[in-house]
Picture (cartoon, rainbow, N blue to C red):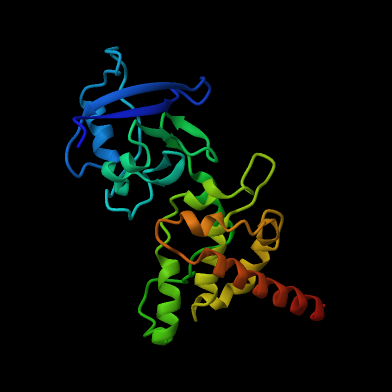
Length: 252
């Protein structure tokens, strides 16, 4: 095993400043991940050339691939830093580990990006079940085991942004909401209580930036760290919006 790990990191001090690269060399520790590498750099922020610098800024929280905060491009592929193991990364590239922030979101600093676009999309599609109070109203509708099995994978979404980062339809010229928000529409529309405002969610994804903006590249499902069947949700959303559009036209 190597005695040291080399990390080349793309940095940016502020949103309005230019990006630059710095290389760090840290001692190898068995079973370390990218987060532990960044922690080692934070403890001794010195470049491989011996130049003192500021600690690299990154975002993380749960450290167990649940929160989605540590998404970044690692060796050219978007993934979670907490589950990106150094041993596996060195098999991809034995010379260095290359870290870059996600490119589809505004930079805050270094590897930290602003994922507000995703959270705004969830608001836009009303990705929740509304309640009119918190008093006891009795048991809700029963859901069959089959419905539970179909819905569970969709609940695993952690709004990490990987699907948007990999999507060619997400760019400066598009306001496409992305696969994650569309998948949440299906999750709540298929819920017995969520169906009460299913028409509102369908109306939302039929607007500009909605389902018709999807180019069916299917990159989203390939990079999703939770193996969510995003393309199935998109296909289902396409069928639901088609039926909704015809029904809405006939009811005029």
